Length: 502
Image (cartoon, rainbow, N blue to C red; front, side, top):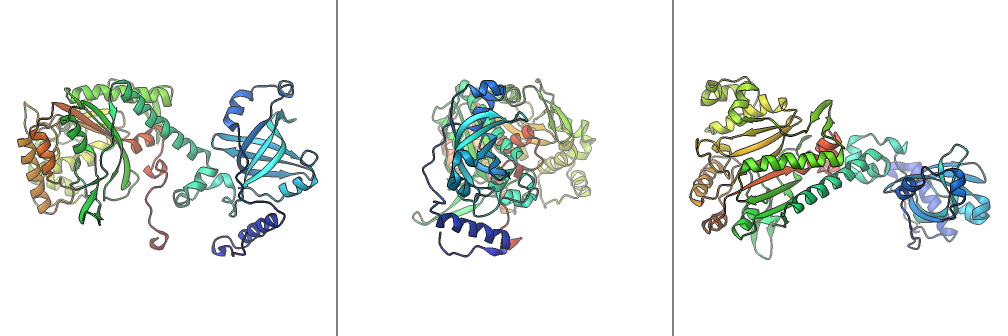
C-alpha cells in the first residue's frame, strides 16, 4: 500500500486508523486485494437446507463449505471470535478459534475490521444458544474496506445518503436489498407473462432524430460524426408501431425513457417502462390482459390479490371497475358538464386549485388538470378510466360514436396512473392532422407538445394493421408491490443534484 494520505475531511481519526491498520497488514505480507479465494456456496443455500437440522445431525454431516462475504459484526473473546458474514443472499454466524487457525493466522484475522470482505471455510454446528454457525478452519481476506461502514451499520437512515451512496444502503439495509430483488422478480414475471402469450421482445433506438410517443419535453445531445442533434427517447412507441407495419404483430420492450421534467416522489427524469403492441385487437382486450398481468404478478410476488400501500389496503382481484373520463369528473370530481365543458369555467376551476393555465390551452388539457386535481387522488382501488378527449390523445384512435373522444384507457391504482393504453391510430391522414395541431401548440410555447415525425407518417402510409398498445410504468409498479412512498426507493441510482449544487 502506498503512503497516500486518506481523505480526512470525511472521517478523520477513524479513517486514519483504517489506513494505518491496512498498512500494518500489508507490511505483514498480507495482500489487501487478492483474487484467490473461491466460494462454493451461498448463505441462503445453507440456511434453506440446514436451518432445521439438529446439532447432532450437523455433527454427522461431514461437509465443508466455502463462503465469502462482508464482515457485519465482530465479537471477540480473546482466543475466539464470533462474526456475522453477509453475502448477497443473507447472513450467517462464523466462529473463529485461535486453536483452529493457529497463532499467526489468528493474529492477522484479529486485525480485520467490520466491512472487510473475507472468505471462510469450515463445517456447520449449532452454538449453545442454538444458532446455526460455521466453524471456521480458515479465514482469508478478499478485499480490505479502507472506509468504515456507517456507524450502527444497520441504521443508515439519512435518506439523501442512502440514495447518493446506494452501495452502502444495499450493504447495510436488508429491506433495500429486498426491494431490488422484488424489482427483478417483477420484470422477470412480466417477461414470462408476455413470452408465454407469443409476444416478441425487441429493442428500439434510445437516441432519436425526432422524439415521439408521449407529450413530454426531451433531453437532447449532439452526435459529432453525423454533425446532427439527437434526442434521448421519451418513449419507444413510434418505433414499436413501425414494427407492426413490418408484420411483427405482438411486440414489447422494457425500456429506459428520459423526460426533461420535474423530480418528485413519483417522477424521475430517467425511468423504466414496459410498452407492448398487439395487432388485430382493440383497447378493450388490453384491459383484460392488464388484469391478468397484475393478478399473476400479485399471486407470484405477494401470494394473493391483497396488498398494503401507504396505509391503504388495495384489492387487485379482477374484474376492475370502469368509468369514462367524463363520468369520473362528475361522479368522483363533483363537477357538472357545465363545469368541465365550458372553457372559461374550466379555467376558473383549475386556477382556483392553484394550477397555471396557458393562453389558448385546449379544453381537453384543462379537463385533464381537473381530473388530476379532483379525481386521481380518490382512485385507490384499481379503476379503468376510458374515453379520453382527443385533444390530449394525439396517437389514439377516435371513438366511432363520438370523434371528440378516443378509444383509450388509463389504469389508476393507489391514487396514481399505472398504465396508459389505447386502440392505435393507423390512419396516416388523421395522424398528420393531429401532428400538425401538436406542432402549432409547440409553436405557441407548449414544450411537451408532440413533434411532427414525417418518417413515422411514411411508415403509416404503407399500412399498419388495426392494433392496440399499452405502457406500464415499471418503477411505479415496483413502488406498489414494495410499499415504497418514493420512486427513488425503487431506482438503484436516482438522479440527484451534485454535491456542489446542494
